[in-house]
Amino acid sequence: MTKNATFLKDVNDGLSQNPKYISSHYFYNKAGDELFQQIMEMPEYYLTNSELEIFSNQSDDFIKSFEIDENEEFELIELGAGDGKKTEHLLKSLLDKNFNFKFIPVDISLNSLEVITNRMEAQFPDLEISAQQGDYFQVLDDLFLSDKTKIIIFIGSNLGNMEDEVASEFLQKISQHLKTNEKLLLGLDLIKSQDIVLPAYNDAAGITRDFNLNLLKRINYELGADFNLENFQHAPEYTEVEGIAKSFLKSTKKQTVYIKELDRYFDFADDELIHTEISRKYDDQVLQDLIEGTNFEITHKFLDSKKYFADYILTKK
Image (cartoon, rainbow, N blue to C red; front, side, top):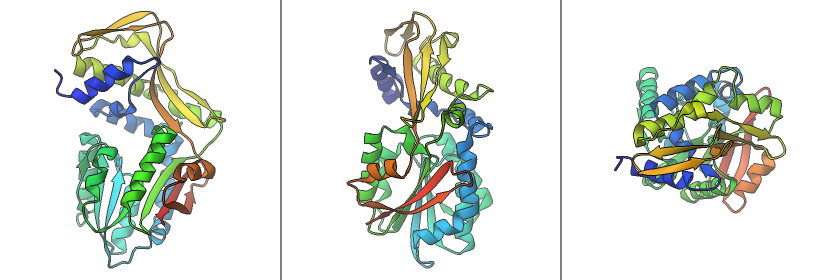
């Protein structure tokens, strides 16, 4: 049996469904992390630069919106921390203003946590940092064991990788953990036209294609499958009306794939799709609908100059 039983079970469950799917969680092995770093540097991928502009120019305003006393000890928890290039602007502002806090980056990828820890320790020797590996749904309870004031950061429009019902439950869970007036800084990609959004998931250099196909490479390597990558295509979709970008892997022929760790064959029809990711886009109303029934209220909204992206401050009532 594979050492990653959860991965094996999820692949088996997803490929047994109609339509087939594989969780986007499994994009992020070492190769996937490196490919995603390349995606974020592609000219078509506006999301990173848009939010980076907000963090670069408005971190002081973030801090004001947190309403934290300068002498109060608090924990700054970042869910899905990635490489920290955006967060470092906020950390620098907090340290320059002599705030007393611990930075807790959380990520499913151990590789990403090593990158961000090394990066922050090199740039900010005085920063107290305590990295936590795991899926944020799974580690959320443990993050709230201390009584210190919490500020949660969930940026990069990572919420958009969840179906709306799951996203609403996730925000509800965070809200339940927070105390009155504690904050969630939530970064969301805004609804835009197809000519802007779709190229971000189908760049001319083919990096997003390679990122999507890396899922099959990972299954081959870790689970002993025999996916022929030449028989699958990257197939993204987006419509402004729905406001959701979707990524698929399309089978280009009728074929059968064997997964050794499962000792099982999976049949694929010509043009059959494997759903690998959603990326929901937002506006104020979509977010308001998601937090309906939680104890969150939208108290601030920060935009980039093109109004492509928004960082919201949600405050626990």
